[in-house]
Every structure is written in C-alpha cells, then in structure tokens.
Image 1: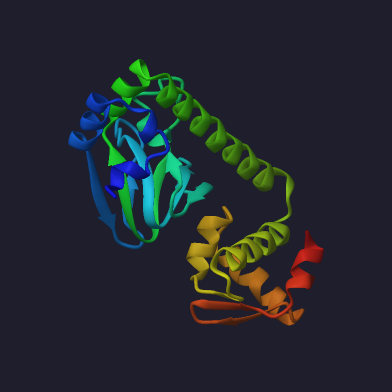
Image 2: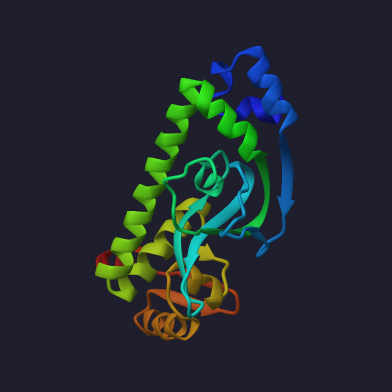
Length: 217
C-alpha cells in the first residue's frame, strides 16, 4: 500500500485527485527535538504522522511554551496549513517529540482538493474542530488546574500511551508538555517522590503508585 492510501479521505478521491496527491506529497523524517513547523509565514501543508510522536505548541513573547496537543501514529493535523484555512490567525509550532516520519500533502494540493472535493473539505473542518477542542482542553488545564494535577495527569497519560510505568523524559521535556518551568517540575517530582508516588532517576520517572496520582485528579 502506498503511504498516500492511508489518508482518511483517499477513497473519496477520483483518479485525477489521487494523482495530484501523489505528485504533491512527500515523506519527511525528523529527529527528536527537531522543529517541524515554525509558525508565521511557514505553511507546511496537511500532515499525517506515519510513525513517532509530535508536539504542537504556542510560544509567548517571553519564550514560554504552552503545549496544545501531541500527535501519534495515524493522527492528522491541518493547523500547519494555515494558508489554506484562512480563519486560523495565530501561530503554532510543531516539533518532533521523538524520531518521527510524516506524510505531508503540500498546502497547494490540499487547498485545491478542499475547494473541489466535499469529503476533503469536511475532513479539513473536522480536523480543525478536533484540534481546537484539544487547544481548549489545554487552556483549561493551564488556567484551572493546579500544577500537581497537570503533572500527575500527564504522567498517567504517558504511562497509558506507552504501556509502561516508566516515563523516559527529562525535566525539560516534562516542563514543555505541562506548560511549566523545569525548576517547578523538579520541585513537584521531588514532592511526588517523598510521598511515594514516583521514583525519580536521571531521564526516567517510574510510577510507583498510580492510584495515588489519580487521587490528585
């Protein structure tokens, strides 16, 4: 199977539209920590994650990062095609949380498809709605949840995603994903460790008491 055939709207394309996608899509590989999409005038196109994990975030004038959502294998994103969806008026950034492989349909081809094919247009707005829902959830967490709750929720979420009670992340990565500072993460992990909830080692946080973390929520 061609990678393009994994696109959710592929079966709704006619032959000429499929040829357009084949000609104007490519596979890009990014290493862990590498910037994928830089906001501003950068219009990447429609993205589908073939493998790995990406993180989308906004950046304040002071340089603080607020994570909006993460995308894993099979997930798609259209926020990086802001030149196609003109209603998107804020800049987002996307980086590789881990080594990843992306299928990217160029903004020109994706815009042409969304103009002529109702299924692609519906897909575009469904994706935009889903991601904005993620954004609102992220904002609610930052505004209305204590930091210990945000950190506990992220550790449990990451444990569920990986199927392991060991979270292999640095304090800086945890800070990026919980929209906080590395020093704040370090202090909270120290508190969690003293309460017997986690065991903290260099680059690894091992969950000892998942029930205790859930009680914080």
